[in-house]
Image 1 (cartoon, helix red, strand yellow):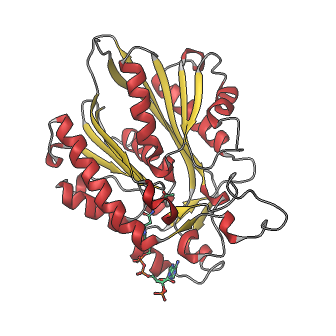
Image 2 (spheres, rainbow, N blue to C red):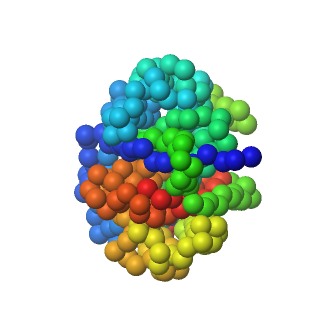
Length: 329
Ligand code: ACO
């Protein structure tokens, strides 16, 4: 089978106007700006209002990406929304985005791979485009994590924020391919280290457990930290090897934005100089599936990524899922 080429046509992102600083958080839980900055690198995060649902933010990011690509929404064949915070259990969030942006005719589904959701979605879209199944796709990572964090738990509530990022990708008739190499993986044995324990069909919410703190995100941060570094380094190395590149060849490394110490450990082990690593978690916190596409959009708009640049995306999240892809912008 002859594979089609793929090109990145446009990016967009959205963050709610409301900002919560570390000092704001110190009025809610027993924490300090100094603790949060030194342990994570996070200084502030965006917090969505009641009307700013995941599909709302995803649609805003999508409109900006479509505008950057110069595409009509009606020309889309595929919408994938990576999220672990859907507006509602079903239908899928991509269909809600479709209605908001008027992309009648596109196939729609959500993809849940936690913080690796964007990398997984890109792989799926790239596969469908390269095999000729679709011509134009938009991949969106969008999260309203502030709706699932326990605001009484300082171990987790200081880490997360809300936002959305979107990327338009299309088949490239001259077979010039910009999807250079990738590697996805998961280890379900660790599912209990980062999860929302109840509220699914295994233990539905009832009048009796409605106030159980296990209805919120629960994480064993220390264990997650170690496995995150290991998994993201190995996924990066495999994706780079498939692309025939070394970490030093990259123009930009865009890692999932969870913790500055995790990002620095990955950059060092992959041998990408610090000035070629994109960091914006100081302003967003961890926005899970939205973090990589928000960072990518910022990097495109502020000139850190230029046409032809080689970029590595690498993510890690609940599951545990992990994955990396090397692209040429
Ligand atoms: N303010 C002050 N103290 C705190 C806070 C806080 N916000 N949170 C925890 N502490 C305390 C704890 O109670 C603990 O105290 P104790 O020792 O008396 O019990 C102590 O600080 C723990 O400190 P450290 O061990 O130094 O914490 P650590 O360096 O492990 O940092 C952190 C914690 C930031 C959570 C880190 O482990 C981490 O980033 N883990 C990875 C998270 C991640 O990457 N998730 C990615 C996936 S997210 C997704 O998929 C949705």
